[in-house]
Amino acid sequence: MDGYLETERMTMRALTEDDADALIELDSDPEVMRFLTGGRPTPPEMIRNDHLPRLLARAARFPGYGYFAATEKATGRFLGWFELCPKDDPEVPELGYRLRRAAWGAGYATEGSRALVRKAFTELGARRVVAETMTVNKGSRRVMEKAGLTYVRTYFGDWPEAIEGSEHGEVVYALDRADWEAG
Image (cartoon, one colour):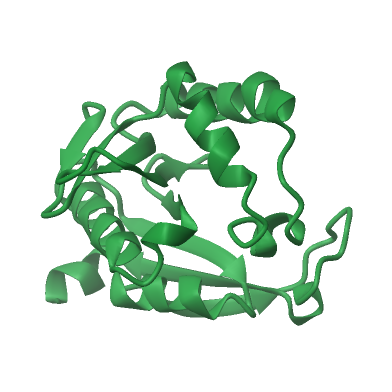
C-alpha cells in the first residue's frame, strides 16, 4: 500500500510508533471499546509495549498491507485507524477499523473500508477480504455491508472474559474478488 492512501475526505498512512498517544486516547473511550473489551480502556503501557509493536510487526510481514492512521483532510484531525492485513494467507486480508466517537455516523468507516477493499483487489492481489465483529455490533456490521462484504457465518469463540453481547457470538463477513469485480 506504500503506506499512504487518500479518499475523498481522509488521508490514510501507515501507523508508526509516533501514533501511540492518539491510539491511547482512542482506546480510552468506553464507547469505542464497548465491543472489544466491554468498555474498559486499554492501559497506555499495553498500547506502547504490546499492541502497537504487534500491529507494526504483523504489517511488516505482508508488504503493501497494514494498519493505517486516518486523518481528516480538511482539519488534519485524527479519526482513528484502519486495518487491511492478512492473518496468515497473503491473499486473504482482514478488514478492520476503530474510529473516534466524534467520527461515527459520518461515513468515514465506510469510505475507508471501500478504499481498502478496492486497493486489496486492484493492487495487492487479494482473492478475498474478510472482517469480523460481535453479532450485536450493528454499526460495524452495517459498515461491512456498505463496503460490499456479506454475512458468512456466526461462531462462538472461547474468550478469556465474556462481555455484554458475547453470548450472541461473533460474525464473519467476506467479499470474494469475483463478486467485487461483478459489482
